[in-house]
Image 1 (cartoon, rainbow, N blue to C red):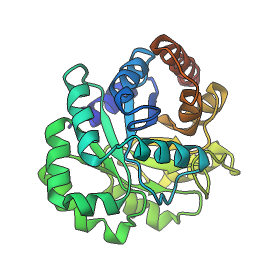
Image 2: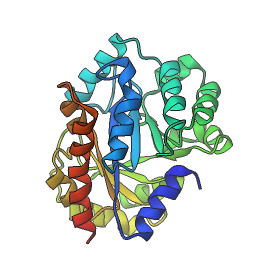
Image 3: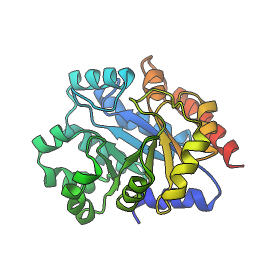
Image 4: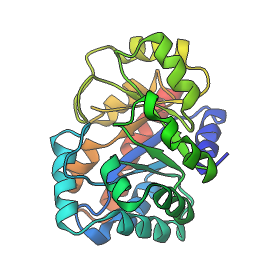
Length: 263
């Protein structure tokens, strides 16, 4: 098991919940990523999901789209992101998952990307535009460099497909709360949706994301999942200049609420 799998398993064994937070690399400033990630860790965040900004995102809502545009204007590239990961890894063992799109990876070089990401200290990869049928293209790289390839399910995913996706995913199963983009709340009650997924996904822990805007939202979803992923809410919070202690305290509110859900 790599750091990601070890952390999630430890939280489950402790009877706790996993808190992951999405941070656009290079936002709000190019040099902020490492300090923000460390502040989030001090606030109790278990996993950092680091967004690789792209000019034409598929799954991102307006808040994360705007942060990606700012990051690209700041000069963020895959090379600078991998460098940030290496710098963060020297100061922390928090699991790091990269989330992004294929075009920059193809431009960078497929195997070179996975190789360099692993060497820098990345633990997992999420490529939301890659369907199950195309996942084999990258499985060899993921296995060779011991990276968790994390796949997604949604409220409309069929039971048969949930089973196939669960079998191919590693680290956790990303349960998208709604059929839409990030920042949008799901219309299906989380207990109903996640109960259905759990019936057909027995390999991986279930982490739910999209539309988790408040600590109360996080608690509600965490009651039925193994953890939650907070993204747009964090990006919105960072749109105003914040001291690192403010960031830690903000994350700690989410951590406290999901722990209530675990009790």
